[in-house]
Every structure is written in structure tokens, then in C-alpha cells.
Image (cartoon, rainbow over all chains, first blue to last red; front, side, top):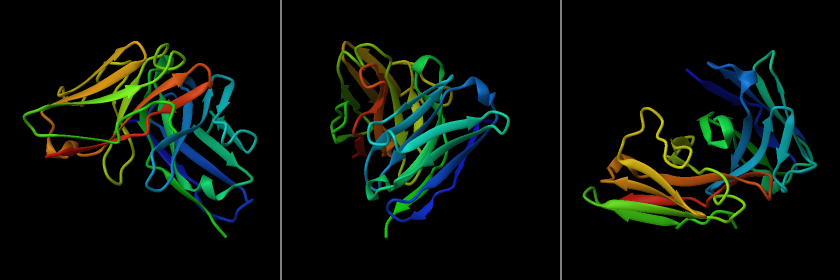
Length: 117
Length: 110
């Protein structure tokens, strides 16, 4: 059974940094593209970043501030977030992509990031 | 404003067929496949449809998806009370080089 477990969320001041982790199990982690999606309180889903093969992709709203990475030896996906702003406040989900951009097969339960002074 | 346009709400009775639309452009739906997600209150999204019309195992067959040109649709034949949720479409956008989601549609079962 595929499991994705996010961690690392919390309360951080504007301008601060945070690193999110997503521990994966139940599949060959290194073989799949992985994505971070966020959801602000009461709002819809917003794509944040994707790591596919050796390529990284970022939403314009986080480009230059967030960095996605993975450690295949630890079956873990990361999202390093810097220069955090109030509008980065959201529940952050990691998701396992299905092949050939066909969608997101599995989602974690999310970790909450709150940016506030 | 989302790159994909969905109606904010939809409703229907268990005897009806409800359709949720998702409108995009040539750089996203016009080129790539569409997936649909169901988000029950307080839970993580779950895939309902991938590759425009494929249903993962375990998803009831009352859910179906289709795509034509730059638009896609999710149909629910005879919605049940447990189907009350938010529904999102998504696809890859070649111009933005990233995934795009619709704004979401809240389904109410009357």
C-alpha cells in the first residue's frame, strides 16, 4: 500500500524558512515523479513544485524561494521554503504522480504551514 | 484566477446525472490528459479519473470522465449523499511548464 507522510510544518514568522519532508513507502520511490500541492484555508488546490527525473518545476509564486529535492536512499521528498510570506500559509500535500503526466495517484494527509508574526 | 475554469457549485438528486465542466486552453487540456479529484470535507484529495476517462480500481462506476478539445467533464450518474465533496480537475500546462488545477466545484446532493 502506498503511503505518503508529510512532516515539518508549523508556525513561522514572515521572512523565515521551513523544510517540509514527505516520507514515502509502498512503491519504488526513485521511479516516480513527485509533486507538492498546497491548499490555503478555505481555498482550492494550488500546484507548488514537481521533481521529475532530474528536472524541477516551480509555480511562479514560489520560484526563487522554494527548492524541491529528494533522497532516494531515504525514500523522502523535501521542500525547502525560504522568504516565507503570509500568503504561503496553507496545508501542503505531497503527491505521487502517475506515469506520463496522467495525474496524481496518491496523496499524503498534508502538513500545515502558518506564516504569521 | 485558475488556469482551468470550473463552476463553483453543482447539485443533483440521486436520480439525476450531474456534470461538472472544466474549461482550459490549447496549452493545457488541448494538449495533455485531464485528471479529476474528489476532496471530502477535512480530507486529502483522492483521484477519481486519470488520463481523461480512466477510473482507478475502487472508484464507483457512477463516476466517468471525458475530454473534447480544450474542455473536459466529470459526470456522476445518480450521485449519492457520500459524494458531497469538492471536485477538482487538473492537467499539465506546456506554456507554464507546470500543473494547473481548476478552482473546484462543490457538489450538493439534494
